[in-house]
Length: 634
Image 1 (cartoon, one colour):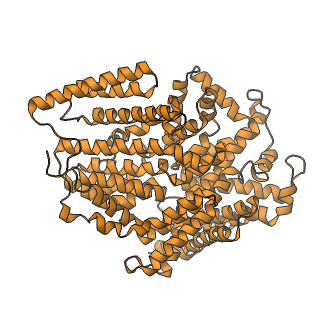
Image 2 (cartoon, helix red, strand yellow):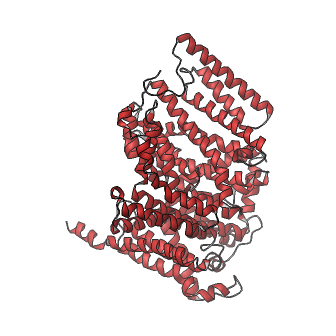
Image 3 (tube, helix red, strand yellow):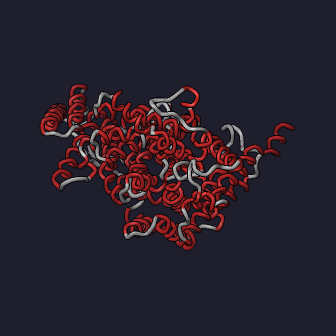
């Protein structure tokens, strides 16, 4: 009892963390209203509030609440991160290695690096923290072991100076994107969720496809896709949407593993689906040097292929199991659902303001303001002041992982720019793959998936690999947008790839299903996420880049490829497919990946032959089933 009281007395009061989180959200809204500050000052305050909040929310271990030690780290973090703002004149006039740093400067810089690494360990996990630590230490390593590939090394003082007192490290582009692009979208998602947009998306999906064969799974696909574009978090999407969809799928006849896998795969697609894309589109646009709308436009069709494949597979699984849809009298009418179309007004306003040139800040805050009438005026969605504060807190809390990993990604980008490590790694990757583009892509795929597993954030993984596998692919002639999109796809797909598949873990917990079986079913259902990136790398027309003829051809081939894959992996066309038919469809789909008249003709012939065999078998057994049947039809 005494031990329990002692622990309680040393834990941080809940209001402390909530206060800092709300202050972080209010600061971001203030900047949006007053105007964007000087980049260094804005990033400094953003990191000060975010880093201190991370120590107040995340403890040293999972089973303990933050205590006195965490409180001390939070206070120290707030001070050292604010140092650039408090010493703005010195920071702006300082020249790296020209003007010496004082003892206080070095102390603050060193403490900032250590605190960010510790916050990174708590939020993102040990693997990403070790990666960042290694890259902080790498510039000094030649001083201990001798030159590395001709690189003589820098002193610890020079490294601290580079990482903290320039815009190449902690306060660089990644933290800038966190404060100007990513945070506003996360905050908007928190307000939309608070007023009930999730329920609207679920009801809309119910009304649209609930009565079709396998309706509950199709509801999951559509509602999770819609909510994923708002939330930007696969795990959050699973936990919110899956509480309804998973039990409904199990009740309809899907196994608990399949139900959990469907929800995990559907939720994971939010990061690759415009318009929001978990705010990664803005980060890509900043790094590549193109507009946000260019990225969003290019991402449209690959995302549709991802969800088309999933939709087809859940339909074919329903055909295999002979499942019916949900009776119409248990579903909301589309007419009644559309009466709540006002839920889409904030998102419509957001897209409009972005399209006419308003900043991300202004657009997101205007969209947040547009949610308030929904919450304050309408009785069914009425919000209180407590709900508003809760949304401010939730938005900031959901952003902590991004803030910390973006600050830590500054170590990665800073180390690579300081040492030329990016060029070295790029040449090693090309050499290791023997100059083969396919070899580089496969190697990049595995590195991305492994990095995504260890980091838990596609954005952090994307930033970590922006200077290694990406330049190697681009150097061999890959379209720059396609290369960047390839990286984010596989960083994102790690959420459903065993052994560390966070979206699968969350869904399996809700379904009470076996994690491993759920994970491998998720890989099968998410097969388009593994194949489509190769298709748009080999043919950028799939990203809607190129002539109209090339785009139309790429779209047709893409649809054929994912349809063939879905039929092959699920084993259903007009009736149950045998192993030969399934193998022919999968192999045929793989031929579609590489553009060219020969490969496409071979792929088409294999798939056509398999479909004809299946049609013959269906007619012979008189069990022909249409591809788009409603409940009660066979």
